[in-house]
Length: 243
Image 1 (cartoon, rainbow, N blue to C red):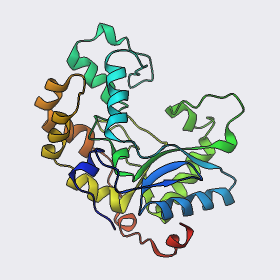
Image 2 (cartoon, one colour):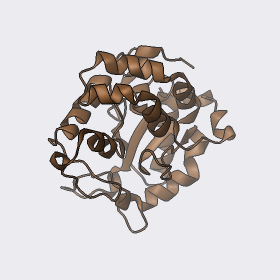
Image 3 (cartoon, rainbow, N blue to C red):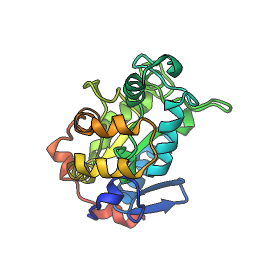
Image 4 (spheres, rainbow, N blue to C red):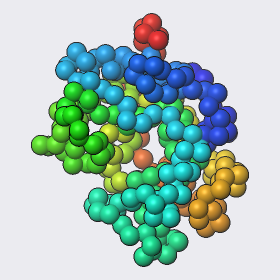
């Protein structure tokens, strides 16, 4: 598998990415085939599995971060309630954003290994996708997809890194990750690599963030579910034929 350098790990380069037309998304070159195989299996089960988000570079993550920090984009607390950013001190804004949004340079979406997925077949015309836990909970719009993913993800090398609240990122049942490669990327994303990326970027709260890099790296990058050994051993195999 193709390993990432420091700039690719932090989303400052996209030389590891392949852009797909159908479905429209951008993935690490070695994740395309496993994802297409997963999507084909989902189709056989009646789901139209689509990425709501795939690769996202540093610049895009910075736009999202800065907009939330300034209160220009909605931010939610761990219970899914809107937060008034103007009422928060800088340190509190950082904590609030990190519940649901990654720090620029630390997003797993930079690697091209991770996607946010949903079932287009379950979405009625005019419905605005929210990507909140209630959509994937029992009785929710994507409850059936949630069950199917739990039963089939590992066969294709994927798992869900944000299944439980571990004190970092809030649970995200829509977020799937190609375990063999994402695990390597996480090991390579050191505090030093992250600090270098932040020092280059115009990120709101930058000085405070840089001072807290070791702590934020541990809580919001490292503190995720570990993939099972059997998933880490997934081989691309015949999936390559689907690219």
